[in-house]
Length: 271
Figure 1: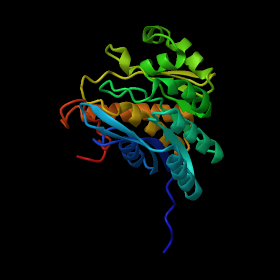
Figure 2: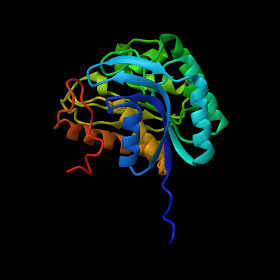
Figure 3: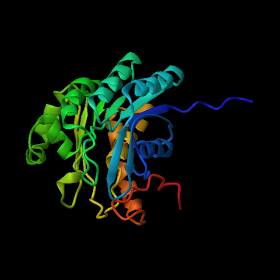
């Protein structure tokens, strides 16, 4: 029997969401929806639902490095998405693993606070994230509050000067950045992409819904999936924006949980 072509592989390094809407679970759903094989290295376990994050249980840094060693040692990983990393030790272990295994197409989502407001990244670990991981990123995907924390400025300053913000973020060492505008309010949600040469605004009409749990995780995973399939960073960001917008629109029509419900990752397949 002739073999079928092997799928491209994308790896997610992030925290697990017990309610299934964000984190590792959202990433793997996104990878599957966008046609790549998903692998995972779990950096933390969370006890959470659509209303709250009750607790975070950190995975030992040595165990995370072992996961990375075994995945990279066996699978041809075409892209890696990095999400929630709660402590400096875990951030450093991730950076070492990515460097040792020459990881390609790294998408860094600097997750700091959950949708419900729970702190997911220790404040003292922000500097470690900036110094160890941002320079490894092919695409950096902060929202407005995350960008403000990375740059040590106010969210109002970020919102009023998005182009300057992108330039400053790129100065931290990433190859490209997409500043997500979901927190800005208004009728449209506009993201801004910059790679040092090319600027592109990515607008979308804002969907009025509480079902936005996992949108940031889903967006960065979608960027990684597109990069794994051979897209350029700009093409990947365009595809991710379209996918997430459709997932929010479809998720707005259902009700899962009693808080911020998830988006619909399989909107194109579930009828």
